[in-house]
Length: 477
Image (cartoon, rainbow, N blue to C red):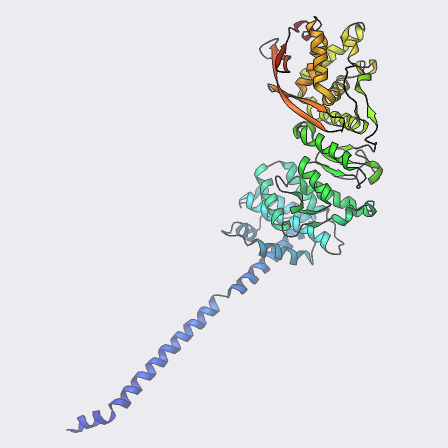
């Protein structure tokens, strides 16, 4: 064995170890550096959420600080994100609201971002609706000094603007904020708590948020007395009665406001002045429709419509219900009659004829003070009779028409035309002795005085079509 061979045989293992281990350590060191650099460059998920929350909190602060002349780029990119972490968004709102109010600047700037911003308006509206609803909720959940009005005004003005898709998005945002934590309003509608100013704020919240609920149940957003919530769900109308009405009275109201088409009524709130200290005319609320006063009259007191013109035999109904029907017809006249100038003209012509010729059957259709009044009052009077018992009116008028006197039927059919909403059918109403309103649908026929002017001259009743020539009275002017 030569020297080289001896050296290699004696020292090869140590040389191999010296060459191998330094290389492995170097590679490990490089790997460690790489991992360290990656960790420093890419924050942990919690850190990303914290950073996003800080940016969002600053954005909310900027929105409320003053009037903006341009949109916030971060807000636009935020709402356009591929995914929405609703829980994180609402939690951020709560953090912000714990130190800051929802201001009029929020109202104006969020409206501008929805209307003029580059982001999708529906996504921006959902964000804004959730923020406003969270502000309303915070007002009720914590001791408050800031006003709830700016947040409610934002929602109300968006609804009035009338963009259906935006309002649906706002409703989705409200649902984000309230579906797990409804507004705690129940205690403020207790009888002993009904008079303070705080109760007025609670009513306003019901009205302002209620217009957005669509098919949702009220209790998903509002923790209120069960009867009030069920009434609103069934009718679309808010009943503020201080729990003074009886079950029979509430049932009568519910039957009326659930059966008469909402498009004709335009009613959004009912008040019992004796219970809440103000009336529909003096109520300090921003109403999204018509408000009516509900009387406190015992259901046992009855009104006999057979004793008033046109003296048609029919069972009496509760006086409470009769007074409500009068209020309802005034609302229907206010909402619907401006769309029917043709009915106003026909009613006016009939009234002139009835006053000029008091011996004709037309003069027996209403009291003189009604016939000498205005067409809207006359049509409201006919409408109450129609709501009380349409079939009784029609049967009596058809009997006269069969004997050659079609004028009373022509007048009664004005009410049928009114409730047809210019369609080919109309609603026949009947108020039961319990105060419950029921209805059925029946067909109408129209005669044309010209290619564009028509009037109702026939109606299906009792399985038969009652149709007559009324040209003479229809051409009165």
